Image (tube, rainbow, N blue to C red; front, side, top):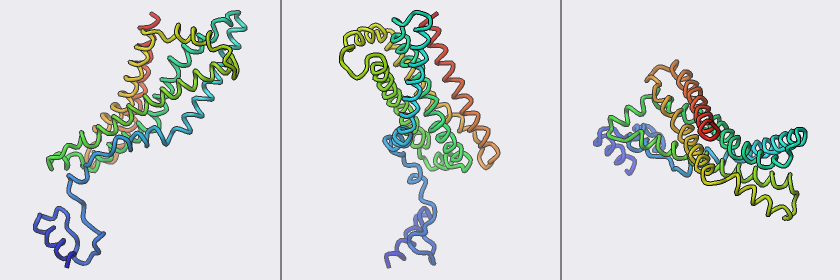
Length: 257
């Protein structure tokens, strides 16, 4: 009786959530658009874009830090400027390479996935259908993904910088607190107010670029045209890499020009 009542109610409502007469209750037609476009949790997006790639990112950040520290130390000793090697490591590794590598890492892992997902929704016409149903597809689908990707870039960059600073101390001073005074002095010289402001602005721009560029490009996918999907997804990645390089180059010009 409950099954029959549910079927009749669906027909009376215009078939928004009907059930076929010979089908069991779990085989339903497509739910109403307002249910299909519920916003995914922002924290779920952070879990997908940051937490799931955390082991690989930690390994990559550790290897990159150790490699660059060793290269800088050996080169500084060869050219007789070993006293500046730690400051050089902090400026190049922490302020420049870690944010750039993090943005590229999240772009390859999550930016492409976000672009492909939005492109498939455009191809299937789900965004247009939601708009016709007075839903807000851009807010429901894009905002959580954009926020999740931006926060993931910020959190992973912070974690990568902490790892790089800690490894720098260990390589130069070992596992003893003997060099804390000198290390703190060098840290204060490198991370002054201007450098921190530029660093924070660059991380913000990287996060916005990773979150927005692939999704915005994916909206160009044509409904029902499956051939447009590879073009918009790859185009989004190309645009994203270009924007990241422009941001990095612009910050370098502003700081060192």
